[in-house]
Image (cartoon, rainbow, N blue to C red):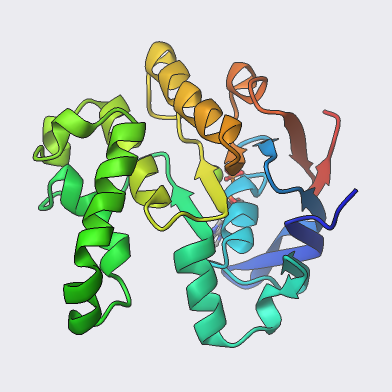
Length: 232
Ligand SMILES: Nc1ncnc2c1ncn2[C@@H]1O[C@H](COP(=O)(O)OP(=O)(O)O)[C@@H](O)[C@H]1O
Ligand SMILES: [Mg+2]
């Protein structure tokens, strides 16, 4: 087998709860190959979000390593880590986290503007707008471009959030309970979007506590006692 795209080894993470540490991850291991669709299951509070945030470098680990294409993420410079967060990883959350004052198109194009100077934006802005339109089309939102998030259904909000996560063409899509706030039928629609992206080669790690949703992924792992297990 080729080298994994993402390789988490011996990951430990504690949070301080008052004076006593809460040891959430206790040597978690996860290897993900490019093109995989992995579901992470586990009880509420088992550390699923914590693990996802560490994989995406939006949280730090206490011990162990996460390697992306062989690079130890924690050992890199902060510009490298920023580039990793902004370009290699796309994050999707249960509650969408769209900016309410911006319309769908503006929400989606925004990550393309982050870190771009005015001059670069002036020369590259049309590429960014084209990328945003293409991805809106892919998730089926083209006719909602001018809508504000509050004018969208839950499913449409999550499509917009997925499009925003993908506009920089990340290698890795990390989705934290993407169907958790949706009714079953809408959840299946969102899953269909993720399946289609995966069929086109997108690597996806998705946290869920819904076994029917997890069953649609290529592989399921379970977080139990701070470790990743392949069986319940
Ligand atoms: N920033 C934090 N500070 C303190 N405790 C936290 C923090 N984030 C998460 N926790 C705790 O760590 C545990 C795991 O949280 P989380 O990763 O969100 O679990 P899950 O996503 O599986 O429900 C929970 O008990 C939670 O309360
Ligand atoms: Mg969570």
